[in-house]
Image (cartoon, rainbow, N blue to C red):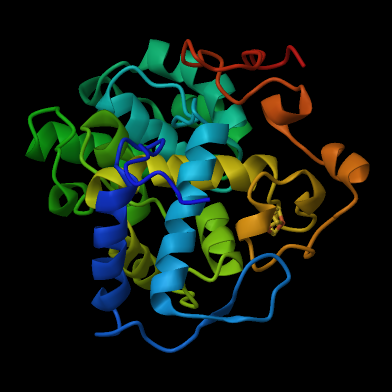
Length: 300
Ligand code: SF4
């Protein structure tokens, strides 16, 4: 049956306009449709053109937008400073553990000026549950001093300023820009890196190169929500060691189907957070979150 020409996608783009821009993105990296880079479809061995990959990538994004219509940053924050601090604390730990730690931290040090003059030992004690607390305390003190002295106590809204803060890299900067300033950015964390390679969107391993190649596939306005959806999928279904392929809503679009558990019943048991019937990571989730709020520190 002929596909409806003007089907409106979950991202608000018409299928027609997406086809045109998919063709442009398909040409962008190779100058033409390019050589085949991936097997096509679930378990298939058919060669796939660059244009085919771009179309498949955009279908994955639309499917994820349907499944994770409530995708959001999983750190609790009320302002750019809190998001910056929470993102720094999220290294090497879960967003849940950060969210359980920050209420006490932000009550003690609500502004960069407050945190810049914190007693290091007290700061370390408060953030201890997030791990690596000595180096994280040092980073937070350095950032707070820089914000106070160089940016008038405000978090800057430009990438070049954010990455000039001590210990702040592109990943942290994009999280802050995308979610506190509404400036589109691609967040290449460990989940994003794993999933985009499983989907053959890129073969790159360096986060900056991954960011650049994925940016060629999607319109800029999609970048922030795309990042959330991919990370949501990585945390809930497409896990590092045991992806739940048998319970995966995009299995038909994935060249790596079968890398994990394919039995639907067994796969269902691997689902995490609200997908598995458990609480999410935020203590204060957005209103449309379909799961339960996470418990405070020590409650579970
Ligand atoms: S869970 Fe399996 S089928 Fe789904 S995206 Fe991951 S590897 Fe692909």
